Image (cartoon, rainbow, N blue to C red; front, side):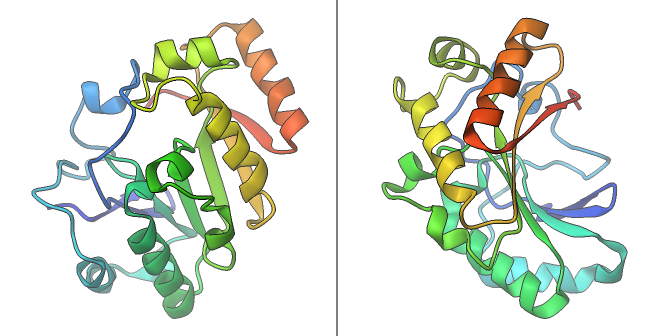
Length: 199
């Protein structure tokens, strides 16, 4: 099964297929791999030791960063994600990034942001929409109402513990006016905004 895979200059970690959201535009609805990775559907979740061992199969000098992003939400395995990130920084000295839906606090039941300090350099959060109503419609989180505000709260908190926080929307999924509202929302939170292409 595919635990690590390459995308451009990054090495991506596929920790889990679990996710509390059912986004209408999710890549998993369209394909089972990225960048010729092979299927990212896991037979089972790899242990932390298995994840660490997998890095030995790759020339780590090729990569600019290690990214926790696969066919699931990495904060579903928060402890193992952070354990792997600490391992990457200690052994390879590479920057680390987490691509997340920002609902890790709801998933884990506590304020997770302080745990990122020293382990994660960049957090990329899927903002997706500019308001709670559109968020429920497009992202369909299992936590229901309150999910949008929880995601915004996490973004505001985690910026105190990592170097860079970016919030993203997917090109073509919302209107230009909504994108501008997202931009203003990110400015208010003090984080970066990026419109990403649908893969």
